[in-house]
Image (cartoon, rainbow, N blue to C red):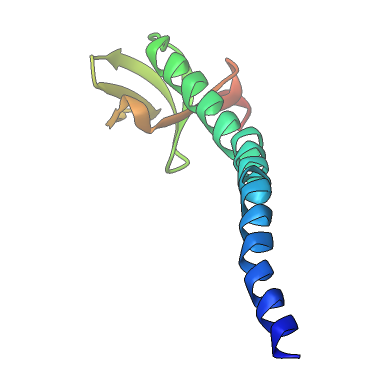
Length: 113
């Protein structure tokens, strides 16, 4: 009887090793699928938005109406390499960093609001 038990114990590691070799790639498949889902749902859209924002900030011009990250609506009166001066009311101008401008709004938005 003990002879059968020792045979079964000896066969078990061989079967386990064969299963591990066959399942090596299969065990990484869920990880690969998860990375692909994260890439297409999170990383790619975020990098696309960042690229569009960078292009928008680079193409700002005098007279454009913009909204800052803080929600301030104004018209660009001066542009510099890293700062923009916004007119937000009569005789009121503020200076903000260019990347702090979040949205370019259509002309006439300030008059209509």
